Image (cartoon, rainbow, N blue to C red; front, side, top):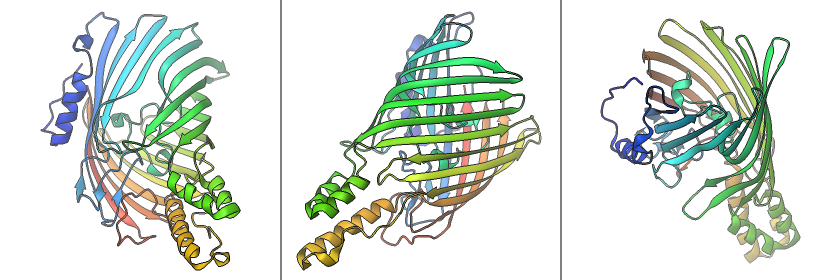
Length: 416
């Protein structure tokens, strides 16, 4: 595979590169005629946000730190990944390890994929292990940004459901209908998200079906997923609300995420005849709790001039549930309890204000500087709406809701 010579990376990225290489067996390098292949991908990025009272985040599981924390952040999109694959005919396997900043401010490598596949017939295959979720058009390669025209996938849709894999089984069946080629995939498993050193979110009974259809330059993917959530998120708030009798109990039942069934529906299509492309997706993510019920979508297009591709995207997310509620009825409470109830109402609405309502317009340029490297520049104009903080994190005391801001991103994507 070709080697790419890079300028020195930021210190944190240099450390994670060494960690990642240490996590992969030394004998995994590709050899001519071998059943084993080894490769990798990475992104070095710098992001600036004009909103100085909060941090811009492309993914709620990666706080990003562009804005209030740092004038320029290298953590929003930067990552390094490697992949070891085996192809033995009917049996094949893949291991993919990715390192990027997470909620615990760590760059430790994590296993993104680790599965074994058995090709039952030319049409039917089965997989076991950690598998990429067949969600959204770019779901299979959302972390390998070199495969994207833009710096990142649209935050409003992809950030609404940041999980990208599940531990379990799936089956894929390939079939034709007229000129259309289809791949239908069914899956069953579970996944876990680490929210802090002590807090987790688990999705049990994760069940889904996805169908990808292609005909010439057209690709269409539709997916439906559902899972049962288990998490202690907001536990203290809901315990306190239940002390206020039936009305508090009703609020806790409505907004507590633990024990709720979450569902996802999405459909997307792309048309790419070569010289230009256009694509769009819509999806609904309903967690039936303070995590929200959201609909999101985008439309994007670009034109290729040799090694340069200018592009533009419009993206939007709306809430299908209230982002502010009255909460406890304070009029019926004695003064000491009313003050405590007011604090709980404020905390509940602070949670609800994090349900994203936002739209953004993006414009950028991709330059394929080499056969295995691309340089990207992108500007986003972002406006959170309806009294929410949109996709921002780390809100500071001076933050003003509803204020638009700009984001400038520069990225070097590479594969090896």
